[in-house]
Image (cartoon, rainbow, N blue to C red; front, side):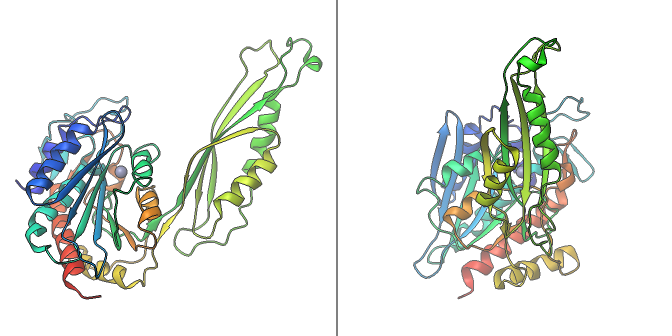
Length: 372
Ligand SMILES: [Zn+2]
């Protein structure tokens, strides 16, 4: 079985999140890894929300190389698909399906590279393959996994998210929170008897629009951003609303202190119940890092030019994995098409899947046979 055929197989597992149900897909991948000689463990943070951790090789001199991808995919959306999202239809070089680009092609490429390198890992630093549940919508699977001992060690990380095989040196961090503003209800004809929660929320939103991060612009990632994504309040036009809620999405760059930002925002918004439901740091490896330069060299013949330092626009599991693999240089590099992620009629290029296998094999070989 090659990586294209394996991508088709993985597409047939319905891992749409929510609800997720990654277990069958995880066990399918885990069984293969086990057959190829890897030591496989599973982690379930909730029923059927299964992640896989597989170790191959390993020695005391150098930490293994981590290759990671997520097993869940996003919902099909409301628009009708012209191609079946689960059967792996192809047309020309395109392989269609929900999760083809984001990121079952990446997972398949990781698995096929793991297979071809399996019998070369004994006595070397080796590899650790981490396939996660519940990446979409908050990286919950990797967050829970990072709280266990199962991840072991890793000295560098490859995240197989869709980049058209272009190596990205990191991505922004994120803070997401809801804030609730309380008031006192009264009849709409006598607003002076109440306290209007919508006014409180509106004043807070106006302040958020002008929020100054006081952050230095990052040379590659640029500025941090803030977006008020939701606003709700009130239960009837003839009532003074006693509750209003907003949802805020912040994207940060290296150098921004999340704790300080949250505390400044709380002060700015005034009296509100703030619930931070996602808090993930940015991921960044200096482009002149020695290993990143090796990655650039290995990608160069495939891309036809030496890569430049660029970062991904989306979040990845690396933000959580780095809590355990602290300081590991991290590249986001995978065969999917980034602009296809979460789209109707999502597809990936089959040629790129093959290229990704070759790149991953070369990176594993480089990591496990070079002395430093
Ligand atoms: Zn993804």
